[in-house]
Length: 268
Ligand SMILES: [Fe+2]
Image (tube, rainbow, N blue to C red):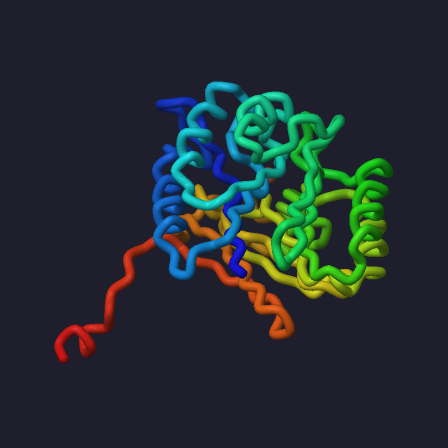
C-alpha cells in the first residue's frame, strides 16, 4: 500500500502571499496535480499541518477547494499556523478530521494494512509544539489497542533535533517522553512529521522518524548557529510511504517537475 504525505501548504486568502512572498496556491496546485497522476495510486493522502498561513476561515475555503481536487481519501492533522475551530469547520463535514475530538484534532486510520495514529502537537499562538500529559496518554492508549499491528505515527512538529538550530528551537516539547512510549512498540515502523519545510530522516526512539518537504516552499539548509532563516528555490514536493509488509516501509520524496527521457533514449 502507498500513503502520500503533503505538508506545510500555507495557503492564503485570494491575492495573499506567504512563505517569503509567493502565491502558495500555485505550487500546492501543482503538487496536487502530481499526486493525482502518481502510478501506483496512493491509498490515502495525509496532510500533516500548516494547511493555511494565518488560520483564517477564508484561507480554509481556498485550501478546501484545492484539497477537493485530490482523488484519494484524505486525513488531516493541524500545525502551528492552523486554527483548530476553523480547520474542523472546513473539514469535519468531509470526514477528513473528527467532528468531535475534544480539545485536540487527533484520529486513527484503522482500515489499512498500516495503522496510522495522527497526533495534534499544537500550542495555540506558538510556533513550537508539545505533547502534554493528555495527548501522550491518548497515544499510549491507542498503541496499546493494537500492539502487533504495523503502525505509523504522524504529527506536525518533529520531536527530535534536526541539526538546523534555527528550526530546532520550534520542535515538539516532551520528545523524551514521546520516545519512551514509542520505544515500547516495535510495531511503530515510522514517525512522520512536517514543519521544517525540507526532508529530514533520523533513527529515533527505535523507529524511523521522517520530515516531509513542504508542498509550498522549502526552507534553506542552514546548519550554523547564527545563520538567519532563509527560503530557497528547491521545488515544492510531496512524500510517499510505500509499505510492503515483511519487506518493510520505504519513504521517498518527489519534487514538482516535468519528467523527460534522456536524449539518447529519445533519439533511438
Ligand atoms: Fe509549522
